[in-house]
Image (cartoon, rainbow over all chains, first blue to last red; front, top):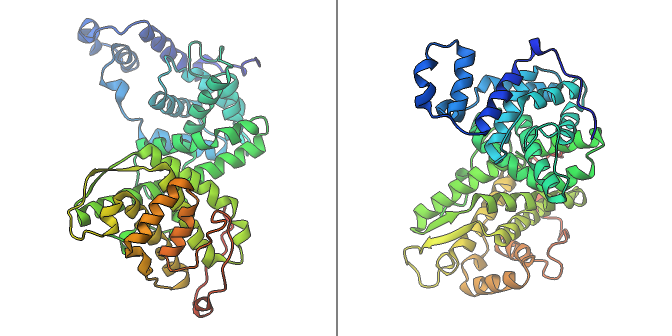
Length: 213
Length: 207
């Protein structure tokens, strides 16, 4: 396994706390009645995190459109904030995969290692395949069985294609776009796997695939 | 039953390009089925996953032979519509839930309701492209309403789904390529194209 990308300063990345709380949630949901009365007294960041743990409606909320727009623009340009990318990818993965845990921190680290070039989307995809941001131990363990590899890549491809999709016209919901991206990803996965280590070719495939959405 | 350009969604893109976008294909097909239900009284269940699989398979087949059609765009429009029919028949995204209201005992739409919608949709897309890019208004061939042809169509595609391409050509009033229907083979130079004011532009974009 390749080494993880160099971690950024925790001061600039507030994601590990969310990952940690997700991990707690993984071991069992707390009933809202237990923590609910105290939520209103807490500062917003902690309150939102606890709402995640208690499984309130907050976890089912749509990702804000501006976050999606910024993440989409970042993926197209090769530059943009890690936090938006992490939130968007986490949303896309969670929406289509029964993965027990998604780490926004790993997504952010992968994006930081990949951004800054014309084939950033391809290198981002490859980085997330090396350090899967979802699964039993995000970022560290990945199932190398062929079926598991293909399934993981389909999930990651879907998320990338979804973000690269043209949203002009606004005639389709994000959920529908994601559904279509998943269908295209299923079709593209064998071709993508054949050029996984060739960023330029993979980038062209991603752009072409997103154009089919 | 819908079947003309006006029933297909019109956006900023020409149909020949829009049809290569899954979102347009899916939503247009859904709308087309809804209109078909309203027109015939039939009710269908639509499997989105199968429809998406049909789109993906069609897109690959379309792209695979596109280069060989650079100089024969008119024929390729019909051939591409035939490829679309083949994939719709193969993946069968529609299932009849309730039969159409009987009007004619020998109507193809009652004989094979799902197949009839597939054919009408593919012909509508073909007609829309021909109208936009060649200013041609096509009429369907008499075989479209001939129940014996539909018997043959349904039976043949069960044995060889590629034959759907040739049947689409037949329904469109063109000369079918029965021997190797899945291989693009330009039939002829259509004299109507000489009069077309605006021939189809060269598409250089892959998507």
